[in-house]
Length: 380
Ligand code: ADP
Ligand code: GN1
Ligand code: MG
Image 1 (cartoon, rainbow, N blue to C red):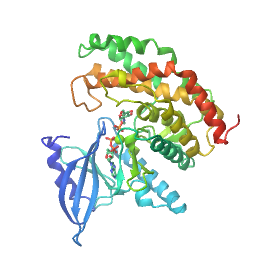
Image 2: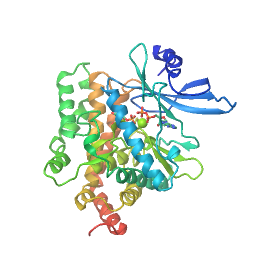
Image 3: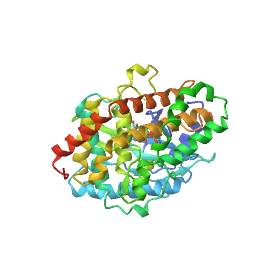
Image 4: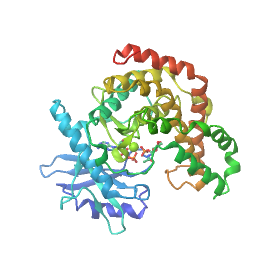
């Protein structure tokens, strides 16, 4: 959010209603999320020290029911908190903590109808936009795997579906086709090559949902938005510390979490890189993440899930590509953009990755087979 956005002026009004002690010293736009507006708040405590918070304006056009969304986050973080404490961990740093309002509510609304929430700022952490080493990526795989395993006992039916059919790739494909047919902005000519690329792959979009429907893949509680910048790393130990951005924690497939992390983190280029020669799938990173993920899941994945990991990577990358492309065709109404044709650039990197995965398919399958054997937790 820019400082000239009217919501910027609501921050003082709204933060005063949260149970935060001390005096607000500074507010700053923060992070690189595509959906919510995030701010870092700096407070002077009554003892003269300093304490930081994360304030977010929830995107309520995308998340239609902020009350249910926050109910999910409160319940999931409280559940994780108990688990972390039981394992002797530091619950204030290893999961998000929702700061309540003075009335005890987990979020607040302002006079313009915006929805706001506050988290404790987790100090001494790093958030990465690109993988810096195989070890970082191994660690993030282990962290996302562990996250899924920690939530294995959580009653999925207690979770609200914050965005219906979020990773239902056939629905996403239908939305994409509709965007092409409507061509609301007259932009299809600008993306003819990309549209053709997507159309040629229509028959693949239902592979995972079909297996789910046939009962060959289990429904689990998953994070569903496992990109690298949704993990905080400990700045000192460089270990993955806390999984954040819990807006889409919902029932899903383990392959969604695996796949979405690969499409972002195992790419040699940024999600919006314009020079497509710089974008390919790094197989060493693919392997590092797979090793970490299998370790983190602690042997809980079925053989079918392990077998489908390459497909998870390909389908999540493809799905993300058609979502960016549909948004470009619809006039950039969903993802924040920072330059002209930003969503088209993003779609192009995703499709370049899909094409590269198709080239490297056999290697991806071999790597998964090898990783599975080495993990020792799965039947081979
Ligand atoms: P979005 O849904 O828009 O991606 P996120 O919840 O991922 O929003 O937050 C955006 C960024 O803010 C993160 O990538 C991270 O850098 C930072 N962030 C979010 N929550 C915290 C927190 N509790 N402590 C420290 N940094 C945080
Ligand atoms: C969005 O919120 P953020 O920036 O972590 C999106 C994901 C996409 C991602 C692409 C709720 O994630 O699904 O994969 O952008 N989140 C939502 O970068 O749509
Ligand atoms: Mg995020």
